[in-house]
Amino acid sequence: MKNQFFFLAGVVTLLFSGCAKIYNSPDAASRAGSHRLIAIAPPSVSIAAQKKVDAEAIKEQQKTESVNFQKEMHAWFLRRKMQNKMNVEVLDIETTNAKLQRAGHYDGNPLSPAEMCEALGVDGLVTSNYSLTKPMSEGGAIAVGLIFGVWGSTNEVTGTISIHDKSTNKMIWNFNHKLSGGTFSTPAQVVDGLMRQASRKMPYTM
Image (tube, rainbow, N blue to C red):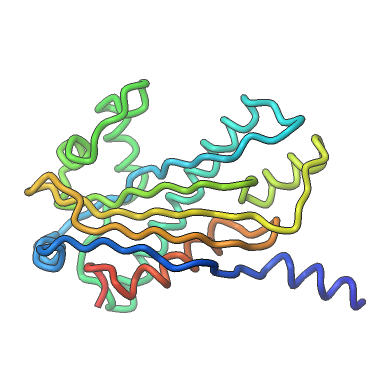
């Protein structure tokens, strides 16, 4: 029973390590305040190479994690809006990804933030990068662990979130933070923990 308690604690625990790095352009507040519609771009996700794990398997897992992180970030913004802590409208993920597909973003020549804003018809764009030491999704972590014997007690995640302004064609805000958590920490837990820290300085939140 005692061992089970510690196992469950390790599953849900998410700890912050290090200090967050934040960049605010001088006009971040005014530019963000002028935004009426923003979009959440598909995050860039990298998973560290692991022994006995095929590179193609890692590549597919990175795609899966990108979808998961995008959904969780979108959900987080919607919750803040429902709580009246944010005024800006957020473009739904299906429309975002469909428009980016038509614009050629996924054809081996990714669009720049300015080009994505133009293709999406939004005032601002939220981009993000997640660097993982292991897969975050529970299903992916279990699959990799069972098949390849890759297990561990922690998973380090470095997350970077940026806000880009369409009218000035520049990044107006950036947040970078490193987290560590249990092997089975989920994208939902990571995004919630990261955004809780980021929202204290994010120009969209009130």
